[in-house]
Figure 1 (cartoon, helix red, strand yellow):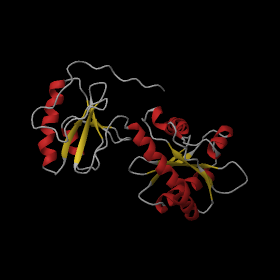
Figure 2 (cartoon, one colour):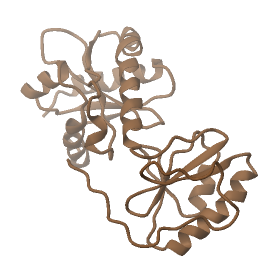
Figure 3 (cartoon, rainbow, N blue to C red):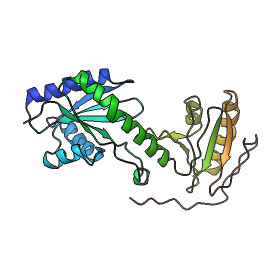
Figure 4 (cartoon, rainbow, N blue to C red):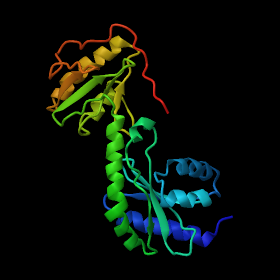
Length: 255
């Protein structure tokens, strides 16, 4: 059994910390008394983005409870106990779910830090150190995860053919999201990428044809980017965009 007072102290510290950090953060407390929390703790431990202070602590003291701080864009921090003679807590960044292993290559880990026992001072430590490094690392891995997807701009969406026949895009803002979703695109909540599968090429072509006028009404143009550096015109024509002539071999990822 874990110590109830320690558990309450961790949860209270996390609540104050979340309220003092820049932007909007919420906190949740995970403890092994709940079966669902126990499974989530195990999954969380695998995603702690640290090879230094926090990793060393976890090597000797497996994660038994934690507080998770979450930001609306998917960023997460984990607050955990210190197992030394010092007061305070440890805090580390959490790697996003569902991004390929290749996205993390050459991206430095945003190693965790030790926090003072005062959550207000702790918030200053996080904002001035860990959070800045975490945001840089997040931006890099999300950029890497785009792979061959060309970046979009506020006034133009770039749609990129994928090796599996799907089409992917990463809009520069959220105005186009509802239109893409309404025409069959699915959004990955972690990378923000929208994908339209190519199982039915006629439906795919129809969706691409129909989104053009709706996006144009918002002042957003469209462009079609082919793989292997073959670029389409700067704006897709009003007619049906080209569709792959045959099945494509799915891309493979090494893990």
